[in-house]
Image 1 (cartoon, rainbow, N blue to C red):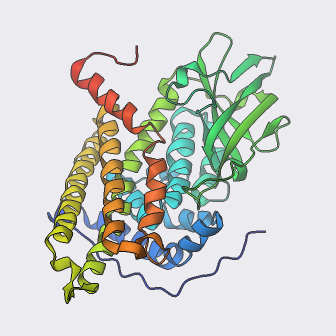
Image 2 (cartoon, rainbow, N blue to C red):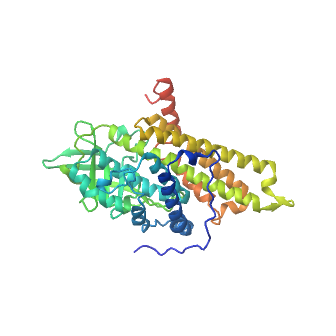
Image 3 (spheres, rainbow, N blue to C red):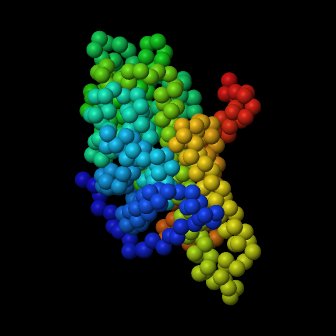
Length: 400
């Protein structure tokens, strides 16, 4: 049974921050969906999120609500229960969810980008019809197994493997740092076959030899549940394997989709921190005047809104390219790296503006800061994304 979570009576005072009038670049549908998700976050996420983070409790009841909201697989075809929306809409939804919490955005982006996307793109018709509508509604939960205990930034060296056994494959190995794994009904897993080619497949909860223990002791993403995937002679029917994709292209395409969403999502966290800091600076009196009147406080706030504005323009252009099918993995890497980094710096500066109050759950900065430390690392580390950009601009591969 899910733990009862006490709700706070604190109201959401957030105001939108759009210094360069970027709303003018959005359609009415974009803004309508944004406002709908923003309202839902204010009503359903913010009253409970500090409690969830403190208790290390994942609010599972939000899955079906996000399904009703259209936040699970928004760009997946409506034929299979998705929203059939464009990539900018997908990004906007991730932004609004992460204003609430990075863990809530992770719940949605793993479901949509790392589970529904590969099934939609690489799955059989039966796989699509069996899984996608239930994932889109939140009836079932999915996770994505690529990272291993000894192979994170270098997934090509994975040791998880499958061996042919007639009408099935025998799967052995382990995956690590898997969002949703202990609560997931299905897992999209990547493993090497006997020819050393990476194959993707759908593993269902209850398959003999399959377990998903929870990782304890996290100081970050505490409202999101993380675990392992362990496979001990798991018999996987061949009909569960994606038929026409092999190699790293499959999992890396999923990561590009997820990284794109993160590049938008991080802006939501940054905006929440900036909004709180701006309001606090206007209300907190020291030396007979608001601290926002002091030059160093204004410097912090001016730099925050400048970086938020640059990040907003970056993802709007990236979303436009994605809608045209022109966004490259390297461009997505640049946006993910930049926007998560500026969000983390904004969280830290906002904490300073709040002084000692900034470390309490009365304000969101410390929670965002802890979350963003993980977001900086997952879906490609900060340094690896820098090298991806370096490779792209020089043509020289620092990884080999």
